[in-house]
Length: 82
Image 1: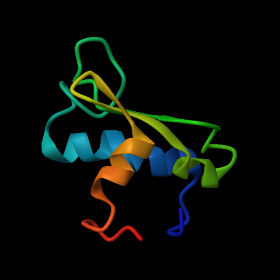
Image 2: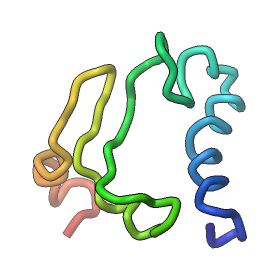
Image 3: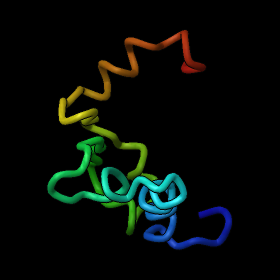
Image 4: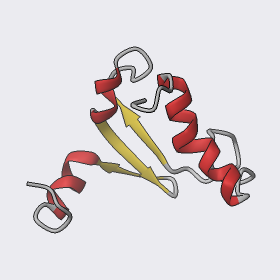
């Protein structure tokens, strides 16, 4: 959004546009039945309050849910987190 994009445009750029550039819109980039289930569940609404994007509660990778706090703790000190 620092580049002047709206929150909705920034979310699209981070999701569907990347899939389009990779030629993978059939399997990733949007929430659709049959697509790969890599998602984040956010507490709040980053469209109306952009800081909410940092309130990740769950992460789904290949359809399996992970607690985001436990993920962060598991890599603390190894990936630039303090």
